[in-house]
Image (cartoon, rainbow, N blue to C red; front, side, top):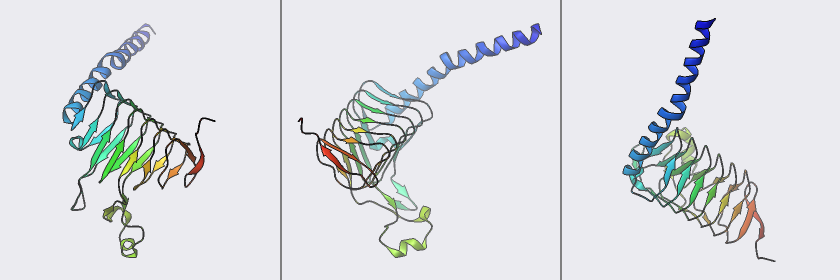
Length: 207
């Protein structure tokens, strides 16, 4: 019994040391390496554990950037022998919730002071051109990636949980996007939108 108690106690100590000492050191090291790989990065940059940043040399990030765990940012420059020129620019004071996914083959710009909830998906491309029947002859995974245009998100925008923003969309400043919305068209400044597909709920006019 005494031996088991000692083993249990030692196990708890090792677990505590791993969580409070070793794990933070590893995470800080990974962030330091990632900062060196980015095209540009400001001060106060941190990404939580289990992140995946593909081709960071195409990505620029401003000051005060924080992303929770399971952040996945992909700048895709080749896919099934096709070449692309992705650009990802993220402004200052941007905070991103867990399980975020961003995929880019063209251009995605996120402005300053943007708050992004959990499980948000932002993409500027699709697998194949959805209006071309010949693309349907191939499995989705093997279709050439196609973009309808850049995704631009204006400053001081708040993106709710589980929002999906698709290619060719320009979102204005001071926009609020309701949870679970799918954004398929441009959004004006000071708008509240929501739904599938997302529609204008009202304009914030201060009255």
